[in-house]
Image 1: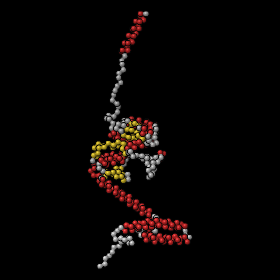
Image 2: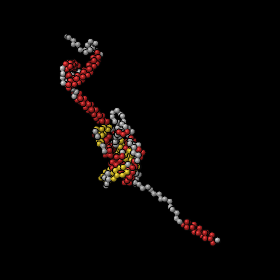
Image 3: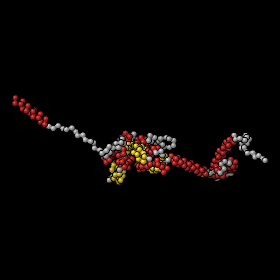
Length: 365
C-alpha cells in the first residue's frame, strides 16, 4: 500500500514539472493599421475621383459587392447610407441587394464610372472627410438645397400625387480651394460639373483674385453664387452658359433682356390682334377715332337688318355676326375712354360744363 502512494506522488511531481516547462502564449501583436501613407482628406478623395481607369469587361451584381470591390480598388472606404434609400420616394428597403452594372470603358474617370453605376437606383456618391458615402439622390439633393422638392404639375402650385411625382436632377459639386485664383477654380468646377462657365472681360482684376473655399456636396448654382459674392461679381445665365461679370454689366444685360422680352410680347400681341377678322381701316388704324367706329357700327347694323329680309349664305352670316360682336365690344371700350377723357378735361383751367374741350382764344389786333 505504501508503494502505491509513493507511485502517485512521483507521477504528480512529474506532471507538475512538465506543466511548468510548457511555454506560455505571448500577447497578441499590435501593429499600425494598413492604409494610405498619409491621412485621408477631402482633397485626396476629390483627386481620386478624377483619376482615369480602364474597365476590361462589363460586370453586374449587387450594390454591396460593387462597393466592396471599388473600395479595394481605390483604397478608400465606401459606405452605404441605407436609411437615406428607405426615406427616398419611392423607398428602397434593401439597398445592399439592389442590382447595379459596371460597363466596359477606357480612360474613364472614377467619378463618371460611379455616377453611371448609381444612376439606375437613384443614388449619388458624396464626399466626407475620410470616406465616400453612397446616398439616395433625393436625400442628398435636399441636404444640398433646402428648397428642393418634386416639380409642380402646373402653375397652380399643386404637387401631383405620389405615383406621378417627378424629382428634378440637380448637380452636386465640391469646391476645395486654398489660395487659388478664381479663374482656376471656375475652370475645375466647369470640368467637374460639365457646365459652361465664362469669365467676362468686364470682371477685370477680380477674376484673378485668390479664393479660399471649402464646399462639399453643395448645389452647383449655390456654389456659383457664393464664389461670385466672394469676388464681388454677378452670375448671369444665358442659355446653358454661366457668365461671371461685373455688377454694372450684369445690370445692363438684365435690362436688355427685359426690354427684348417686352418687345417680343408686344410683337406677339400685335400679330394676334392683326389676325382678328375685323375691319382694319375702321378698327386698328383708327382705334381712337370714335366717330369712325360708330359709322362702321351703323353700317354693319344696316347690313344686319337687310340680312333679316334676305337669305344669305350661312357661313357669311356667321362671319358678319362675329365681326359685329367684336366691333360692338371695341366701341363700348372706346366710349368709356372718351367719357374718362372728358371728365379729366373738365378739371383743366378754362373748361366749362358745356364745352369740356377748351379751345385757345385768339386775340384780334
